[in-house]
Image (cartoon, rainbow, N blue to C red; front, side):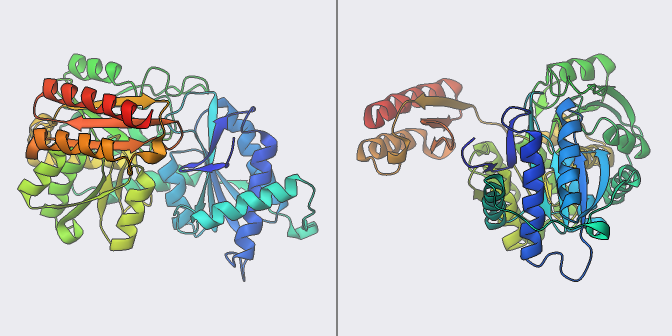
Length: 452
């Protein structure tokens, strides 16, 4: 698998790449590293462990729990809950560590392990590196001190976590959802219980699809990566809007009453205006990645809201928000972070706040989302090129300059080396789709010529 920790924990095909032995070993290593870092000093350590409904999560959860308890950590098993719920409970219960078993929007055969530090925040990169190093040393035979007797960890189920998370969500809402009809697509995932409960208690009339997880059907033709069923259901039911989550419910996409998609950029735009109105948008700034649609940037400029852009990945958005104290950030894919109330993207919270804005204003989601116009965006992947020379090739720089001159202020060019494959992504936005395709095609040819 190469380096075990990626941008979002450790992921792979369950029982092939990600085995029970690995889950147990990583958990032991995490306990040791956090102990060495002083996290457990002066008290008996506690961890919160949750998972999504994947069948493989059952044995991986058992392995994680065994590893932590064998290293002297008491474990609270919260069962099937969204990733943001595990993060929230890690913080609210004062736990020293949180562990979530999920591969998010990936297909069912995959699974993953994500560790949260005290407070529910993502572990620092240096701690992940240290955990990996300790795991490898143990795996190759280096002994470790094992507690015995009363020193071993105790394990218990914490069934109150579901209700505490839903109560937290409702406490954040600025107004109720009475009078709204909402279709919820739960991706047969981790939010199949919590999301309908929260929307119902907030006053909405709900219709659910993708809310019958059986361990095998997560993300299967449903959820935020497959919006077709939600679009059809919203129109068929005459609903005001639809909300779609992914498998671990850390993201949210929406559908308006006409069946049209409302993406993460549009959701950010709607929430930014609502939060500014409530004086909750600190520094009147929103954080997004360089892949956000140019229409979003233009809309924020028009509304007098500053935009800070980061590298692609919600982890970079979160880092920028924490470092500079911003309250709202996210990605086009639907990862929306509301930092005053969540330490990670929370799809259910995002959906609730979006619905609350519809209820509060009496406007349709289509009307609210029209604050920004999505400019046509063309993405071409150029494979088998030397991606390391993207920023140094004079030939490519000349082609980009010419493209930017042609597009002017109503278009944008972005060349981005893939983080995992030998390819370069060419992204072009323009006011006209034909122009975007034409410019993107020429730039893709230039990449092949300059870097091939």
